[in-house]
Image (cartoon, rainbow, N blue to C red; front, side, top):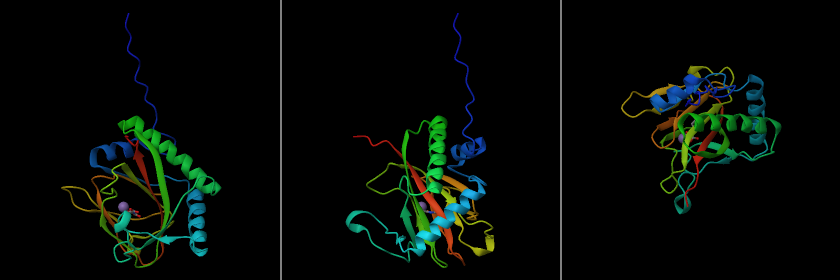
Amino acid sequence: MHTDTPATATPPGPWLHQVTLDDLATHGWSQQNQFLPEELTLALAAECRALAASGVLDFAAVGRGAAQALRPEIRGDRTRWLEAGQSDACDRYRVIMETLRLALNRAFFLGLDNYESHFALYAPGASYSRHLDRFRDDDLRTVSVVIYLNPGWLPEQGGALRLHPRGELARDIVPLGSRLVLFLSADMLHEVLPATCERLSLAGWFRRRTVI
Ligand code: OGA
Ligand code: MN
């Protein structure tokens, strides 16, 4: 007698809601509030501010290779890449993102095999013009992720992430602490609007395997 293997409904992970995955599949983007525990958001925000105070956040460049340049009028954030073992809070965050990577692979067979992430700090007035997260010479970035580190942020403080889904009206997402935003790196034009106060986030990218 032949029996099919029962379809086991594997939950996407302790923090990720199924609807977040469904929305990403349907619309090319999704968001989920309270993705990080509040105390982890606060620890990460404190770490980002401490890195800024010790002068190790650098203005992010635009473009790649020889064309790379600092253009603060296009991109005004200061960033620092995360490294394994840099702090307890960052390591906890990396474990959570690993759970997310596995959930995305289970749901969509995307073959995501690594994650890169940086702290980003936008001073008041800083912004990031409309762009795609893929480089012309590197199409491995597949899913973009932003997690905000601004507890109690109000819409009137500005700093929204403005998504431009193809063929749809633009959507503004308030950078409220612990909120997760996911979108497909290849397709989603987006920009960061200026804010009236310091805006903190962790931006990251799940990348596909390098095909040699
Ligand atoms: C980026 C970016 C969005 C945000 O870093 O590429 O688009 O809301 N960030 O911080
Ligand atoms: Mn971007």
